[in-house]
Length: 110
Image 1: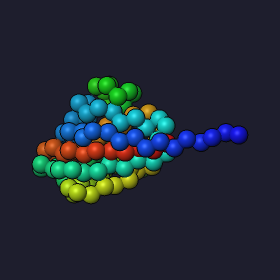
Image 2: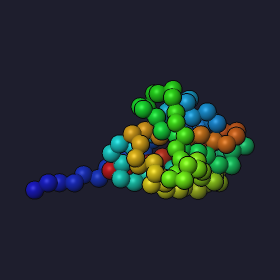
Image 3: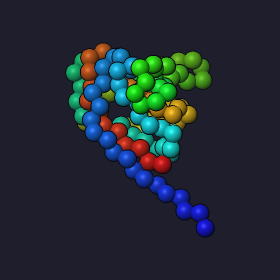
């Protein structure tokens, strides 16, 4: 009999800026679900999602929807949100603020 294993992975806070190339990549390869918890904001009101080749990559590609529009998430401190389904196609994603900074944590399960 095959056993399906579902693990939740919780990570330390990520300090986000408007530069996705400096944010560590979040592993999505085995994720079946994920959420982001917004701890604090300093000038940031939204974030965009970017695809990275690996966790340490300094290259980040903005993730767009099928219509070619960037995927944007509005931010409020103290909320959590589910990652958009488009992010599950990536091996790693990075988050970038529209301005200022944000401190977030994330959890994946797979």
